Image 1: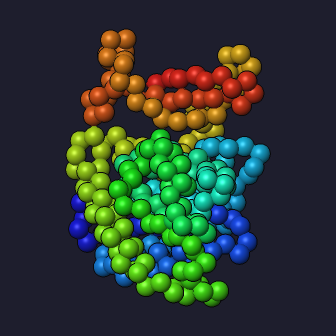
Image 2 (image 1 turned 180 degrees about the vertical axis):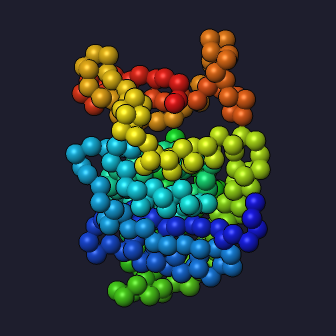
Length: 269
């Protein structure tokens, strides 16, 4: 691990709403991250990511967002609580990447107008983070009664949040350093590095090779969407020759038919 290479932690602002007070939180967090030595950041506003609503998942991947996630050592998500859940566009954006997230730290800042500091949006996002392969820290950023924390220009009114976010960032930066060290030095990280290299080469693949990697639905005959990577740990008896020694199982791709919803799984190419 290059100790001189900065830790990169972008902040994702997870709502497209107009007059959103979550933007004040996101900008506050970005400025606090910038105060840390050896750490770089940038603000990612999901409403500026040009995604289609005619499809979903990796098939509508934005290369700029994906390259930022690949470079990141950790992520911070700032999400307001909407009707006890998270914004739909945030999920739409997050689902466009899969392997880019694996073994990277994530911290969540919940925002609410009430007194619970976005606790319910954070709890709703935790299983999503796990499925994406991200590693959540145990400290959250809870911004309660957001209208009382910042003024109409976005200036911080409650200085207690500086100490609160300090604990959050210390834990996230520590976890980011540990996971980066593991990915670069512990054998299981070899597979993850291969994923990143493989993704970087996708743009150079010939059209014939791209087509050969597609999966066709056996029922509908239409091209299936690549849904996720999974490790099959039960394949020791049926597929012993395909087991990757670094991950202890067989790496597989799950594909879903956009027409009938049928799911097919095969060994990853």
